[in-house]
Amino acid sequence: MPTKETAPKLNRRKFLAAAAVAGAAGGTLNLELGLGYDYGEFAPLNQTSAAQYPTNPRVLTLVGQSNGRPAVPPTNQLLTGVAFIDASTLNSGKFENLSVRSSDTIAFAGAVELAGKGSLTLDAPSFVASSGDRVTLSASYVALGNYFNTSDYFGGSFASQNV
Image (cartoon, rainbow, N blue to C red):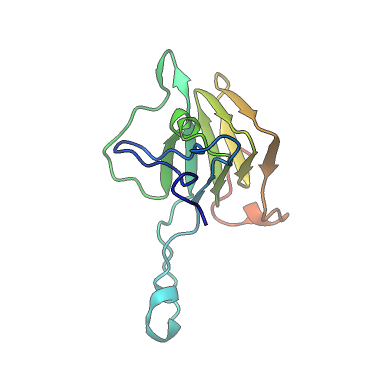
């Protein structure tokens, strides 16, 4: 149980996972853009439903810098099945362990740098970047791959054109 001295600090603008005491771990952050909402899971008597929302592929984009600006400008549009995460925001949290997962695709935009002292895990069946993008990953332990690595994963209707 964390004590007042070892608990992560919370300020008004952002959550910092940096340890409050020298030598203590900085915490863990798990980000996941997974399967959508299925009414059947929550319906009375566990009724099944063919509906799965959102219906489009899930794409989690790690956004880096491009010419000193975010490679993807922030938007106030309602997006479904899509997430844009600024890599510098993740780094500024100073998490000891960082895990980013997507049920379909992790995309990179711009110059993306992710760093951590402990572990860094990127888990998706597909990784996508444009030819001008640059990705730098650094941690004591770095894992890239897909936990659900099966040969028929892309056999469905969401087959990626980028594989």
